[in-house]
Amino acid sequence: MTILLTGGGSGGHITPILAVAEELKAIKPDCKIVYIGERSGKFASLTKEHTAIDEIYTIFAGKFRRYHGQSWIDRLFDVKTNALNMRDAIYVVLGLVQSLRLLRQIKPNVILLKGGFVGVPIGLAAACGRRPFMTHDSDALPGLANRLVSRWASLHATALSAEYYPYTVTKIRPVGVLVEPNYQPVTPELQKQYKHALGIPEDAPMLLITGGSSGAERINQAITKLIDSLLSEQSKLYVFHQVGKGKMSVYSNYTHERLRVVEFLKPMYQYMGAADLVVCRASGNTLAELGIQGKAVIAIPNPDLTGGHQLKNAQRLQEQQAAVVIYEKELNNSQQHLFDAIVELLGDRSARKKLGLTLQSITKKGAAKKLALLLLEIANKKQDVQTQDFTTTAS
Image (cartoon, rainbow, N blue to C red; front, side):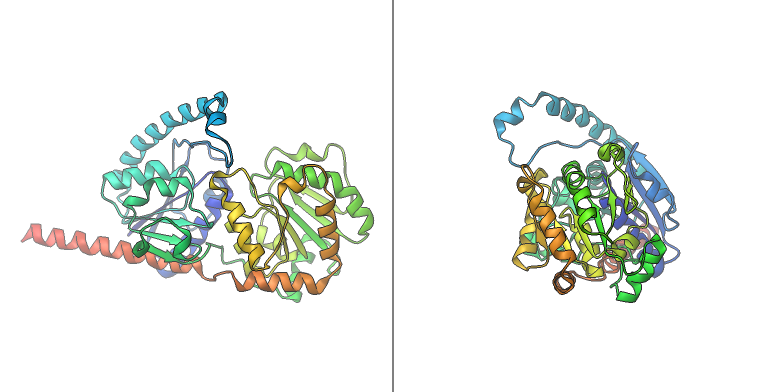
């Protein structure tokens, strides 16, 4: 049995795929798992280093750039964006040709499209070859890539219940957000172990800042403006900041013995588990990881993503009082609101605990295993059909 997994564009699409791959190998060790990613993708090393992936291929892929809140007039005269979209349309065609060839070569029993623009040519190729595939959406609003190929999907696995998604209701399977098995509820003792592993005092408060695997420029800028005051006021605080690839210069020449600045944190579950408070984007994957661990979160949603899916995630958090939400427009003129929120939560253990438990209570568990079982169910049906066809032909 061969199962094809694909997704890309960010680490947030790839790490969930690895969680599914692990579950598939645990349930059916003899299955062959193939990954197809974007040619020259920034996070290809994540799959190359993982033992559950048996084969890796890459294809051309292109994205359709558009920005939440941008008017049609602005889009029409956005020359740079339109030029990039025209170039990437060619990449999609090239990727489709490559995908058609690869699917004939690999002959997958089932395909998972996790999201990201690399899934479009593969989904179209699967539809052309009548190969079953399944999508997964981590946010309250499905991504464009999955929407483009949704009509041909066998099933749609989702993070939330059916009312959030424009898919055929009978095809929706709410499983939750895909999270690696290393993410577990963090007890006080486990948190101390994580802090010890990171080389900081077990009783020292720790703040983690992450804008995702690619970083977040506006969060980075806000933190650099308040970091000196924060470390001065919080004399025992340690700060770990994942700034994103190529963004190390954001701090210029500023250094501090209790500040750790890195491009990409690995293993992230350890840094999240050690943290007393996390400042992050409102992506479905990040929130699910922190929810399983039971962490207090200050979420700053990205307002520019298409459809405003992080804004929808943040609205849900606010409605359920599961996190403190600060919007980017509040950071445009001053970082004081963010500074005050950080200081207040660092000084209030009971408030942090309440936020963490609430986020944990609304986070579905075991999503990767549920999705792996759905994939195997589809794959087994495919095998049964192939066996019946062979028997009929032979007779």
